[in-house]
Amino acid sequence: MISSERRGRGQRLVIGSNPERNRAHNRRVVLEVIRMHGHMGRTEIARRARISAQAVANIVDELLGEGMLIELGRLRSGRGQPPIQFAINPDGPLTGGVEIAADHIATTLLDLSGTVRGQAIAPLQSASPDHVPMQVAREIEKLCETIGATPARLLGLGAVMPGPFEIEGMSSVGPATLPGWNGVDAQALLSEATGRPVSIENDATAAAVGERLYGAGRKISNFCLLYFGVGLGLGVIRDGVPMRGAFGNAGEIGHVSIAPRNRVGAYGSEGALERFASLYALRERLAAAGVPCNDSDELEALFSQGNQVVMDWISEAADYLAATVSMLENIFDPATVIFSGNLPDLVFDALIAALEPLPVSVSTRANRSLARVVRGQTGRFTAALGAAALPLHDTLSPQLSLEYSPAAEAAD
Image (cartoon, rainbow, N blue to C red):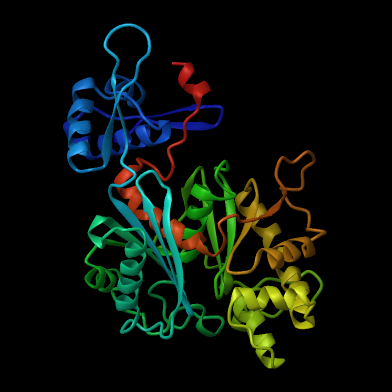
């Protein structure tokens, strides 16, 4: 058994294991305990991680040598020799996250404490596998340069792409999925271009991870996230862990037919949700009206001007999304449903307001501490943040996010 868990007030405490075969796991536990508490001495690390003092001493020495930890000196408190304190090295290894969308690439760099060190968005002229890998490499290199780092400091990269993965003929709207990638080993191509290990994830799942670690889901262990990329995807966090499915395709809700609240529904590909409630659907309607809209700033300006196409789309999308929210609530019983992605905050707020009145579901309860639907807090970098957390998770965390409850620990 790799880890043991103890719950207190709904929290999970992941602890270490002493057998040598679990050394890699114990390294992650040590790193996560230090990250959570800022700085600690060896004895306190061993107590909180429940790993032997000798094992902790060996692991700390290793992590110091690898540049993952730094020594802060001694903490003066009480009698006796004060303990030497260790902390995550803010200038040590980095992890990178890349969102490869149909029309842009978003990149993020994190240090091992989970702090964002750099972010950038660049237009993508071609989403083909012949073009994307080298542009990803260039964007990562440029972002490293802006913070005075080299790509050699990267432990690894997380890359997210719109799904579904390895499914032919399943695309509901325009370029909601990336053309030309079927049968292509994206992980190998990106790793070869960047020279770093790469993890691949569905964009909506990564977005849910991003909101879980950095945004509206930080204190929520169970939520659903509707991700507005070009199409529409679903990320589900259950007990703090993302639901991925057997082949990484969990959450392809944009391809589902939904009966709208106040309109006549269609079924099959013509009734797919993202044909009505997606950024692509909105841009399609604007283009038909002769109104160009290529980025978030232009869309926000159109909304602020009261553009009728945008207002009509909000009304239509809300009719489909209200039913979608109710369905998700009845299936997953989440604490809330988060709307996140590439829409401006003002448009998200108007869209959420237009959902009312939401259909009755298991979430229709009095005295809710959270609204049934809330806006995400990480903006257009939601998926890239989640992508950067993938190698961070592999290096540092025994679980997606080790939760700590002082009340639970005091009960020992």
